[in-house]
Amino acid sequence: MFLIPFFPTLTTAVLVLYEMIFYGNWQTAFLLLNLLLAWVPFLLSLLICFLYNSDIKAVFKTTFMFVLGIIWFLFYPNAPYLLTDIIHIQTNDYVVLKDHVFIYSFKFISWFELAQFILTIFTGIIVGFLSLFIIHKIIADKSKFMSWIFVAFISLTSGFGIYVGRFLRLNSWEILNIFSTAKDFNIFKIIEFSSFFGIIWFLIYFSLYEIGKIGKIN
Image 1 (tube, rainbow, N blue to C red):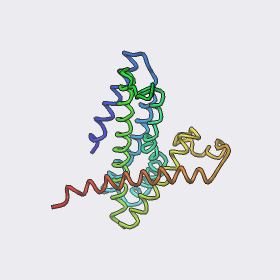
Image 2: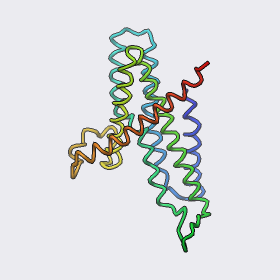
Image 3: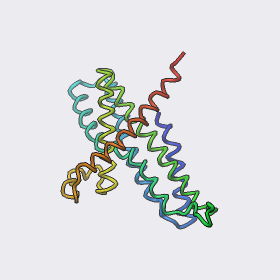
Image 4: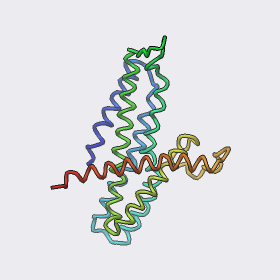
């Protein structure tokens, strides 16, 4: 499971570093940090799964899983957050309208950066799905109904996490600063934005979940 998101992550990192070294352009260097943060909840979910299947005493298992679960919850929105990195492609002129005709740029670096953003979003979807899937299955061992309630809840809170990261510019470990940072607090717009991206993320997860079941059909 670890190798599934590893290779697209490695490929993205190589492309970003290649541009930095050979083109002297650091414009997409931020993708490396975003990818690293998206990996945190995935690695935490693997650790939580390991503890869940371990033979350590129940009290220690429950305590460790609870603490790791809280950290996982705070860092999880970093995965779906990568979806919004697509906005940065506007800095490149891929196409212009001239005399009512679309003219596409043949500037290689622009398309090179487009590939970086596509791979970043793709990786975010993979690590986000796998991370949530692991926790989903653990909860499903107790209650399938509650496991899907959990998925819906995480999706919606991830939408809010995207808002916090994109507009308030706060990281996962700065969540306590949210009220002092927020300006022009408009609850309706926040709910609208969070719900919109929460629903999108839920649909992505549900679609991949159903695709995974195809191989089990005889």
